[in-house]
Image (cartoon, rainbow over all chains, first blue to last red; front, side, top):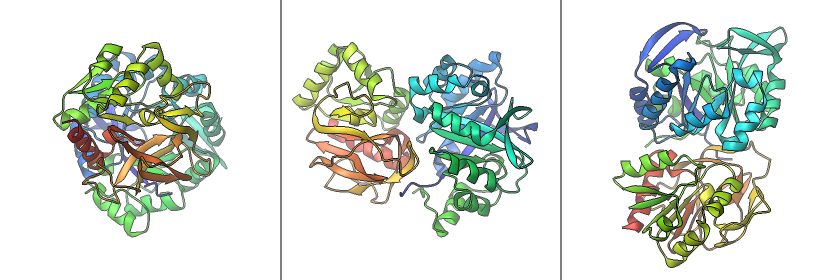
Length: 254
Length: 200
């Protein structure tokens, strides 16, 4: 198993601009998506995620155009999502240049969306995004950008999503998101050991050590972060050299 | 001019962009005539074996494709485009592949997480034209659950995930890779560059 652990920058996009916020609120502008994509492609990112945080119907053409512009800059895989409600929405995003789509709120409301898109496009193209928040001794699934509880256990939902045909899970800790206090190791390890597909950990990253521990104790297959990469607080190459020095397999760009 | 088989099931645009970045022209082919008159063919593919084979048959592309490869024009299969060269696939056991290579495509063992999704390295078996100038420890991007597991003379590089499988094959003009060169950064670009050289 030589599979490299993946480092994935995430662009939260509102229309044609990248935005960032803390705990999904208080957004501010962070630049042009295509420019950031080109930078990450060159710096050795293993994949890129673009999420439409507005996810409104009338903004859809703008988002699809953003995907096209971002895809044009990449020689690495692109995952895109936010507001995908049907197989047609999924097709439009894939046609615009994404390799994978993320499903979140719409899949919680109608789980068959996972099987429908998985049959049409293959499990490798379907990423189930789960926003999880701790509630007592369990984690509950949050929807609508983390604003609403779905009253569903995150581990159960992850297993169900995989059974329906999700090929990967993008797991965001709502407790850690934007806090820069480190990934949620307990949550990620719990989900990763419960499912048979790769898990991307998200939420809370700041220090290189946070990445090292999510790949070891957290059993993550990939780790995602946004602002620390946008602001160049953590250059990707340095991060990968840090991980490689600790025996974690990573793809070092030439 | 590289002719890309458009089977409606793959992200053709990313392959086109990768070729254009390297200065190559490409066109999409959806008809038997386009395949028959091609000077170099590329069969990209993601998704389900059944979807690809059904499109090849429905659009009557199977015979011209097999003829073109047998005639000796440069061919590159990517991902599902590699798997389609074999007799059969466990993913759709009732269908037959292009039958240009013996044996079948099978699911990777479930000892590791599936799909095999991410960056992995190759184990070189023979001299390879596609891998010329590629670092021995270079990583390539894979995204698949099924793989060709019968390593033959044509297997120039393998990859290991749960078990060993065919990662790069070259048999005269017929080349194929299980990974996605168009998504594999500079290492992938070098593989495409090498294929373009074979087409020149």
